[in-house]
Amino acid sequence: MSDALLSLNGVHTHIGPYHILQGVDLEVPRGGVTVLLGRNGAGKTTTLRTIMGLWQASKGTIQFDGTEIQKETTPAIAQREIAFVPEDMGIFTDLTVHENMLLAARNGAIDEERLGWVLGLFPPLKTFWQSAAGNLSGGQKQMLAVARAIIEPKKLILIDEPTKGLAPAIINAMIAALKELKEMQTTILLVEQNFSMARAVGDTVAVMDDGRIVYSGDMAELAADAGLQERLMGLSLEAHQ
Amino acid sequence: MSDSLIKPRIERPSLSQTIEAKAPLLLVPVLMVIGLLAIGSGSTWLTLTAAGLAMGMMIFIMASGLTVIFGLMDVINFGHGAFISLGAFAGFTILGLLGGWIESPSIALNLGAVLLAVAFAMLVTGLAGYGFERLIVKPVYGQHLKQILVTMGGLVVTQQLIYVIWGPDEIVLARPAAFQGSFVVLGAAIEKYRVLAIVIGLALFVAMRLVLNRTRIGLLVRAGVQNGEMVEALGYPIEKLFLAVFMVGCALAGLGGVMWGMYQETITAHMGAEVMISVFIVVIIGGLGSIEGCFIGAMLVGLLTNYTGFLIPKLALVSTIMLMGAVLMWRPQGLYPVVKAH
Image 1 (tube, rainbow over the protein chains, first blue to last red):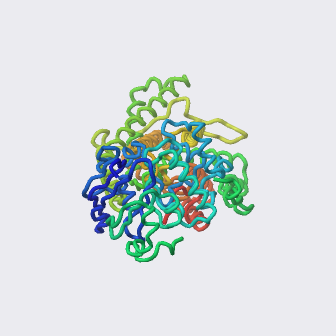
Image 2 (cartoon, chains in turn blue, purple):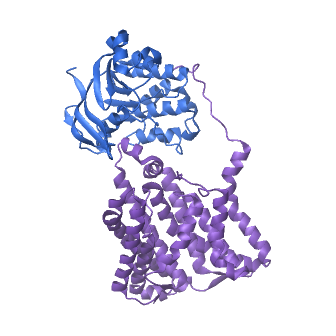
Image 3 (cartoon, rainbow over the protein chains, first blue to last red):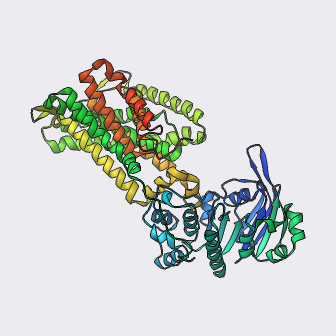
């Protein structure tokens, strides 16, 4: 993993009195999908939020594209062409779908060609283009969250559990969208508990436990080794399929 | 992603939901009709209604900044009244310098004097807002109790500074000649100044709606009110947006201060703190963060104060508090809350 777009080295994060990340070392190779797995409370969401600067790393370094970013503000990090899709999707429910997308267009206008491609990935958004985003279903909101993240070309996309609570049809659609992004050499760091999804799109994988990375390697290796899954996760990942 | 897999579906609001959503828009006309029936005399009603709308517009001007500041920044600014007073005194200074314009029979010169006074008041209060946000508010973001304490402290300090600069006495703020006296419409006397207040209030409401709904900065403010963290994650420095909105909110308080001062025809250092009771009632009735709700709330408060002041004077003082209680029983978060209480 020498060509890492993003590297976390010994990153610690405290939230109030709690020591959440306890020395995270993670490399996200350029142009692929890295899946971050782990049980609830392992520190996956905190890792993404720390990368985005939403919570400050108290120790350690975060290198993005050769530059240390752990002391930068969230807007400055976002301006480095890093998009973030939070677990709660971060949709502005009182704004229309169009307005949500417009906010992600940095120079104030959406590129028509890019928009056509994005709406091709997520057709329902076209139907509800002028509707308040708060009226969308959960799956449609998730599509909007991902669409907003990719309406401008990004070097890195951080996505936190995009399939949580979604119907199988929408999960399959989300997998298809992520695969298309992968084909375009977009680097993605994906937090996911659905192992089917993780296996379908992941190139590399890192497993977290108690605020640390306890395993990292190729997804294919982990997917093929039930014993390793059992050891890492405490239960067979097959159970999540 | 295939269309066949995911069929677009959106839940249309039912008729009752639509009526529930639009009902607040009917409150002002309904109150006017009730007022007409209770007062009986058409000309008296017209005079009171014009007075109520003018008062409501001025309260709206003062409250609009406060509600946006609360909605976007989650800051409870008890010091807002300081900017109302400061604006009134800054406007008084300009009107004092333009004595010839004010006494002139020319409407253009009178209007010019008012506009210059308003512009100067907004400039002074906007800049004072910059200092207030940097020194007093910024260190206590997210800490409501401390916000109340330090902004109250800021209010007291500003009042004392006004005493130092302009003296402790009540000052008479004369209206320009063109805005003294009344029009007679359908037998009702309508003060000219109240017409000016209604025009300025309406213009401000339309301008705020246009800025919020048709511009990128407005889009950012509306998004920031809902989820400031996500606005930052999209690459926008929300701290700068906070500062800009705070300054605009203070400048609007300054505008309201000049208008209110000329309406009352006297100004004092604590006039802002006194009117803040009505301002807070309007913000709460309207729903935190909502310009539309704030506008409706201000009209209701202005009209109700004038109607009850005529019909049952002893009730006038508590009528707006009773109105607030009634609205909160119907809609616990106000008419159109943008920021939902948890």
